[in-house]
Image 1 (tube, rainbow, N blue to C red):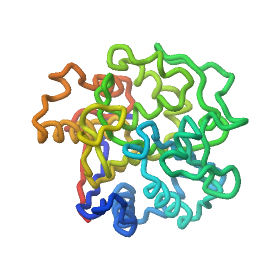
Image 2 (spheres, one colour):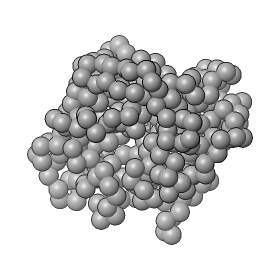
Image 3 (cartoon, rainbow, N blue to C red):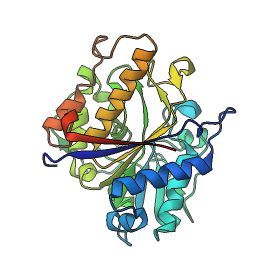
Length: 299
């Protein structure tokens, strides 16, 4: 990526999270339409989708289900995205919702499917697994999920935003720790430079077409496991194509929520997500607020 300004869209609604813990899908649909139209710059996201993805693409939708039912990419949000892709002429049979484990996907409400559409299964699904071709970049070396290398030709990165006890935050960049077989090796020094190295891999960098962040609920402390006391129904989605800019905005959201809760900033607790700046230095995107154009909408 060059030094041009990166666009991040934030769409919020005070009503999308209902009082009984459900999601108002009608409002969610409006949030997606506003966000995608604003990001496309043309006000015609179906046409933009057809530019992002070809008719031959199988679109991977990489979710994050590590946090269980309380803190994972919401099924309702992925359903809306799949529906919008389908309405744009990209059939559901070419959508593949995935993460590390079948059981984690099932635990948060996804339905495993290997036929029809959208497809949905984990890397540990029978016959899937990790590629036997070692990939390496910088200090990272490992095997990537075959869902990423063999099944999908383009993908949407669809993480949640939450605090992480080692990395500071987990958002789009760290979501790819679910794409490699040995993420346990890469948590020293706040995951720096490992997250930046991992996202520099061609298989990730060249095939990631769109990033949507589920901020319907945000956890600002105690992650990555879910703790309701430090989670808030934030009611927002982020849209972008620059993972560094997206994570920079997400970092700001976490810090604002910590401040509101009377907590010290992540930097003060020695958990500043330094991998974001490293990723910018690698040319993966913009972390300088002067080079990030954040457009905010309220539904």
